[in-house]
Each structure stands twice: as C-alpha cells, then as structure tokens.
Amino acid sequence: MSTNAGLFTIGQLAERCGLPARTIRFWSDAGLVPPAGRSAGGYRLYDAGSVARLELVRTLRELGLGLDVVEAVLSRSVTVSEVASAHVAALDAEIRTLRLRRAVLSTVAERANTIEETLLMHKLAQMSARERQQIIDDFVQYVVAGVDPDAPAMGIADSMRRLPADLPDDPAPEQVDAWIELGELVADEDFRRRVRAMAVAGRGADELEYGPDHHAVVEHAGGALAEGVAPGSAQARTVLDRIVAPDTTAAQRARILEQLETFVDARVERYWQLLAIVNGHPPQPAAVPSFEWLIAALRAHGDVRA
Image (cartoon, rainbow, N blue to C red; front, top):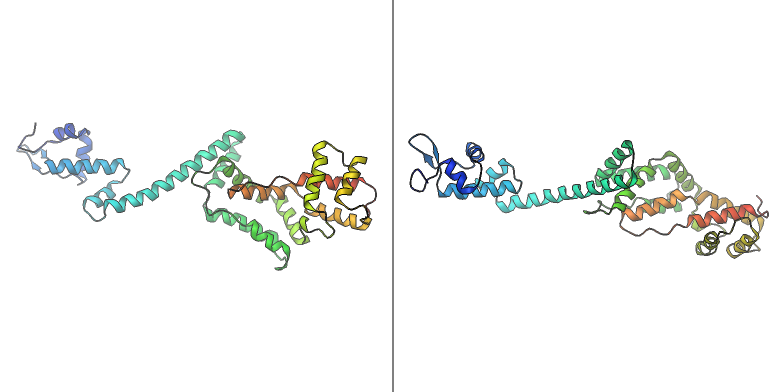
C-alpha cells in the first residue's frame, strides 16, 4: 500500500516490480530512478513514472548495458536504437570469440596437447586477421627474397599469401586446426629453408623440363603404390615406362630425377592443403606419395646417370 496516493516507498516499489530493494536504492542513488518526493519521515517516494522508468532501467541492464549507457539513454543523449545497434556489433564480436574458443578447445581435446602446445594454439587462433596475414607475408617474403620478379616462384608466392580476411563466425574445428598447423609450419626453420631452396631453384614440379605428366604420375605411380608394387621390382619398371617414355635418355632421366628431388616435398603439399582448408575449400588429394614412388623407381633402376 502506498504512503500517499499513487506514491510508493522503495519496499513497495520492490514488491511491485519484483526487484531487490537494494538494487532500486542503488539505481536511485546513481540518479537513474530519482524519487518523486519524500515522505514526512524523509523516506524516498516513487510514482507511476518511476515504475515505468525502473522497468526501462531493468530491461536495459538485462540487455547488458552499463550504467553510463543507461543514463545516456534516459537522458536522451542517445537513442535506444543507437545503443542497440552498438551492442549488436559488440555481441557479434563476443559470439565470434566464444565460437572460436569452443573450436580451439575441441582441437585441444582431440589432440591431447601439452600445456605449451595448447598455449600456442590459443595464441594463433586468437590472432587478428592482420596478425595472421603478417605471419604468412613474412614467411613468403623470406622465401622469395632476391628472386627474379619475373620468375615463376613470384606468381606462386602470391597464391601462398591468400588467407581469408577472418576465420568464419562459426569456424569448423578442421579450419581452426588447419590454421594452427599452418602457423606452426611456417615458423619451422627447416620448412622455411626448404621452400626457399625451391623458390631459388626456379621451376616447379609441374614444369619439369622433360615431364613427367602430373596426371600420369598420379594414375600410374599412385596405382602401383596402392597395389603395393615395390619401386625396385620388375613390375615397377613396366609402370615407370608408362610415366617416362622408354626412349628417354639416361641424362634426361637424371634431370627428371634431380628436379623431382628438388620440388617434391610432402610438407609443401601440406601447406597448400592447409591453406585451402582455412579458406573453406576442399584440399586437393595428396599427390606427393605418388611422386615419391616415382623418385624411388627412378633411383632403383640402373639406367639413370648424371
């Protein structure tokens, strides 16, 4: 019951609105819900307008707005719409962070990492788009430093830089995992030196001077690998002849072998697969095992000389 017609004490207002009296008192002290008057005993009294104002304060606070923002809305220095738009953006950012954190935790759970690896994974996954891109740019710059601008490696370098502007709002665990593995890979000094050596050498494995055809290697060498054909066997020689023409000279075979050994690397292929996954594309099937079988077959047969 009100003390005066249409007026409520803090206790009565608390009962009416379902809020703790101490909360109403705190908001009143902060100037968000000022009293409409005072009782004869000096107690604060609130009217119907106070009830409406209190309900608005509660709603804004439940939406996560700080007291300063609530005060700005009540004073009409900003509109509820403006505040809501800003908080939608903030919540979107928070949701992205939470989803990314969830994906990282899923990866940690699956990998059973050490504490050090877990910390590294978290650091890599939390990086901004600019920071992630800078890691890749630094790696590619190291790889192509001093290489002729017209060399084929420069075109490949541009492709090696292509990262998405950001990880998706709801990244799949394999995307987070791929980014983490990619970050670890480009930080590996042996890998960096290997890719640099390939860039300096010039030609790629798909531009060998005398072949072989990529599809032929995957079809025939890959088939032999799947069937368990040993590279040094007589059967392997038959397969080899389907990939490298039998009339290819020993010098040409030696050159093919040299270039294959220079440009075939499982970790480099993995780089491209990881880049595809991070960008949301299906990775190409691994072809390196087929080329490694071909290298072993070329070495095994005695008609290769320098």
